[in-house]
Image (cartoon, rainbow, N blue to C red; front, side, top):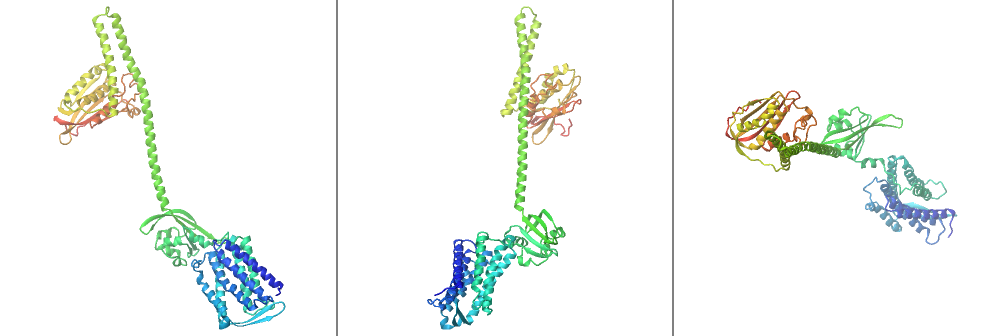
Length: 618
């Protein structure tokens, strides 16, 4: 046995091919690694068999190495097509479970090789030509050889076509990887074609193994330098089809040249029925308003609402111009994204924000009310300290006078001192009653005590009570309708208290003027009546800023109200709450310099009532 330099080189290349096969096998979980391992193993068998065939090897004989070499050549085309399909992802049907379908021809070919001596379908005759330094083989090929060759070339060309289409759709930075693969398959393909056509470039040697030597060099460069298995390129159309946004490319003449699955699903047609059609015709039947809206628009970005089936949906539509390398306009790219869910979420967030803002405003109002209440209570306490201290000092002073002068002063003087003590005590008692009544109202402990009462008697009693104050301020008291109302059933004490508060205020804050007290009873329904009172004065009136706090408990004005006249500032607040407790309401109208009109009403049961017309004007 003797080896030439050529045989030795082929054996070294075979070992290199086995190394590549082992490297790919260790990474067989990566796309393309398993078929690449099979390719390397097949090349190793082919190179080893060819090297041994060229050598003067006595055992096994050269014809045995011819058959051994054919094992690699048979498996290589299938491995190549499998690698191209899996690496590029272009043939999803050719997965690892279905690749055995392509191996059927391989198995049949191997069986023909093993039985060729009997049927002569693959090779009709094989002649050894012993030369120096090579042993050459001269073969007369049979029919099945050409069938197998056609099948092999079909697999090789199909794989090359898949890679070529892939390289055209692959980002520029991955051109080196795919170009190296094409070179790896082209070199042995060209060399084998030269051998089959009888074109001899280097004596009688078959250059196909040397073509595979170049293939190994390119594969090694791709594996170790370009990291082919670790960094796998993704074609542009794979990215395009994987996007959830709808994308449609239209050329400058309005023809659809590209569409992805998301856009086709929205349009409701398969991509094959969209590409090559006019965009106007595709869109017009579904959304004619969109055609008119974007007919001449080259660039846009907006949100639009369109009908999709029976529902209305929102889309974020973007239109981008397409330019070639020379910046020549080539068409438009339409990109739309369904934002219906986002719009609903935004609307819900807006509603939540509005509700939160309303709650915030309520909290601010409650805080302001609480702060105002605290300020009012502080002012009330400061005012009450003065209101309580003054009569207490008067009581103490008059008691001291009585104690020291009981023997010297006259009976009339003593009676005057006792009257002053009685007035001061009554004022303190009224203050205490007002505070207690307000506390009962706010705690919900105030109840109604309905009795039958004569409205006229209550009006007379109230006016008689305030008559001294009327005379002191030189006012004129006018009564309207007070004799026309009879007996009703209701809470007489609270009606009297409200009327007394209103008439007292009118008399207190009116000087040299007129105070009018009126009452009317209006029919409503069944045996219920509406009892309505009003008190009108010609006093100084109430400032607008004071009107907002008239019914606020403890809100005592800093100006003359509450300073010139003593009081706790609870009269109107208690009166309003009494009216509402009885099912009625208290209202006050006033303007500075124009007097004040206070009116209140409540429902009562009629017993003996002189009913007035409901249209009676106050």
